[in-house]
Image 1 (cartoon, rainbow, N blue to C red):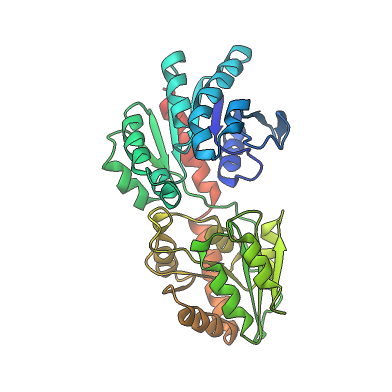
Image 2: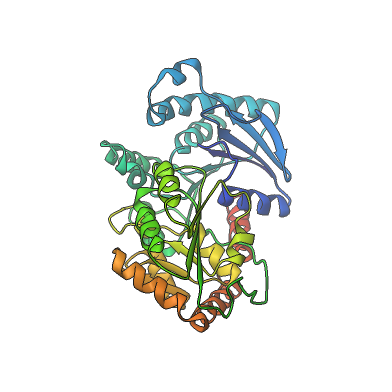
Length: 372
């Protein structure tokens, strides 16, 4: 089967899309990804690990617009035209849209070509843009209308599945952001057995992630090191500047390989705001990276991540304040036996359930069912 995936990013670092595409290729399908490269920074066509990548660029008019949220509405038309060109060159059998930001293109293709449409919601998109767009409710209403035309929906966890079951009567399958198992045995971190703690955060450098507070707290603690990095985010420059003020905080910038660093460090940090309507129910790559590496996490109580952490006893969930964060860090710093205990539980849970190999089976089943 020939599959067209569509997403509104340049597909240079999207682990969920990559894992899904690779799994479908492994199952014998052909996958092409039509990706929106807003800044025209990458090749228009390339093949990566068997995945055909075609990038869609802005028109001159789109480049004149001040914000990507405005350009997006015009990309729905541009991306649709680019997809039709691909179909004429090499017809595809099914359309797989990643997030609401690409779903309107998929709907137009479904109507034009009479093809099955899969909607893969990484985020609750209307909630995600609510931090920046005052008319965010428009996207919630638009999504609800578009859902009527979707043949199968993919969602990241059971909490979000319950949310979408109230919006659609269609089929929904949970495929979470779990990671590939990289080891069956517990690998000791560099500080194993020591009264020292190395904390790792690699990801989007956003204000809602409690990162400025993390730098401040770690900067005042003995025996603790923070390794923090990320390619983008609105507070990236602030993080870099504040990190330079502390000898025990290392700003790493862009990190190409996350897993080796995760294995070296003692604990992974992933706090998110309980006030963020999207993130509070989100599954995070950071948690699952930590679990397959056998590392505990520090996370936010009252979130999906916090609930899973407490359920499996694979880290410490805390309130969103600096005192709670300081206490959690000191607790893990002073008790290497606890760190190892939580890490071993994390690896055991990943091996049992929270791994991509099991999600791959669910993804392949979706394609088998939708094409019967």
